[in-house]
Amino acid sequence: MVHFKNTFFLALVFGGVFSTCVLAGPLRLIQPGGNDSSITGSVVFSENDIDMQKPAFLLGRPQGHISITKEFESVIDQKKGDRLEYLSTSKKNKLEFFYPFNKSKNFKSAYAFDRFMSDTKFISDAKISGMSMYASGKGSSNAFAQQVGPLVLGYFVNNSRDRGNGISEEINGRIESLSPDAATLLLLKSKAEGYQIGARLGKWGSVSFLKAADDITARLNFVDADDDYELPGRITGDRREINLDLNLSPVWRVSTAYNHAALGNLDAITYNDTLEIGRWLSSEEYKMRSYYVSKTASPNHVWRAGFEDYSGNFKLAGTIDIFGTGANFISGFYLYHANGFLDRRTLKYGCGWKKGNYKYKMGYAYSWGDAFFHADIGKRQLFTYTSTYDQSDAYDYSQHQLGLGFEKKIFKKTALQYSLFQTIPNMRKKNVPPTAAPAAGSAEPVIKKTTRGGTLHVLSVKYLF
Image (cartoon, rainbow, N blue to C red; front, side):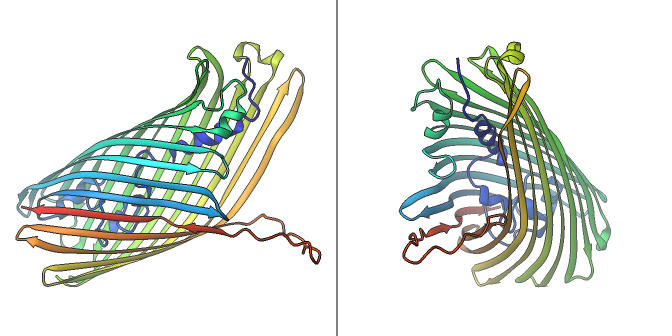
């Protein structure tokens, strides 16, 4: 029968699965103009040019288009001496369509559609040694918006699916019954659906409310010839967002937004599809407030600056019974808990200008904050309880992001776009005890750790109509 040397490792891996639903392109979510700051508008060219999950904003786009986008991203590349610690890369292809059906002042409608495919590679020899994972994903989005008089209504639905496979020597070694080359399999499915309702305030601006539901289904399996450990999970919840735009003058605009989301999960952990060996429960919540000011100096020159305040936290608890739930009083079982939070503040600036057949855009963002993570695991056997793991870590966090892009008309209604984004992260552990100075002649060589942050290349061809 299986014996888990360190079941908490499984909880860590499974909890990390839900960091993103579409594996390729995590940097898209944190770039200026990305999903978490879309009220800034397309200050920087990116494949996120249209935010499908805010359908009411489609009505502000006057011209239809079809675009084909190719994306390559190096998320992180870290080495310590000659040893590779982390490497993650992704590729993505996307087709996007947008069409405004009506353009009258009091009656407008618009429709948008996209379809994307992705490939991702992740290699690690640090916290989880001998880990390699390869994944492919695909998905699509649909969004529709309608304006009747001052009233605006919008609806969107997004579906994505990722499949991954790989191997982890360390995880396999921590489950005694698994062979060293046992496969790690991953399946992720995500659906987001919601509506947005708003009103035009005449020359003063607009206000809108968005409500969306998220449904994330995942399955993580460790499989060899005789064993199949399955960690399923279905995380569901909803999010709400309020947006307010105020026109202070024909040139100046102020925008603010508040976003709140809450998600949760309760699932069983099984062995060979029949034996339930544990359960896990999780909850997470995040809030974000953002404030922006923009100036349209002329049709050829615009800039925006803003501030975002993000806070998120999670809790996780569960049990793993090494002989199944029917005999836990006799054999004993493991109990694990984890919790943590991330607080982040971000300053952003972006500008765009046009000269001849060229458009140029630039964006810069600086983020800072702190994070905390705690985990503990214990084992109960008969009438005794033993703590086998208990650790807390706190971090200081900062990050620089720079984006540059240009657009050139290559034909009358066809434009070529290219963008380059660079992310430079810095995370420092706060609770590392200082080390004493080594005795003379006994100092060990310092192993230098080098980290290259994420680099994102985006190339698009857009046909306007």
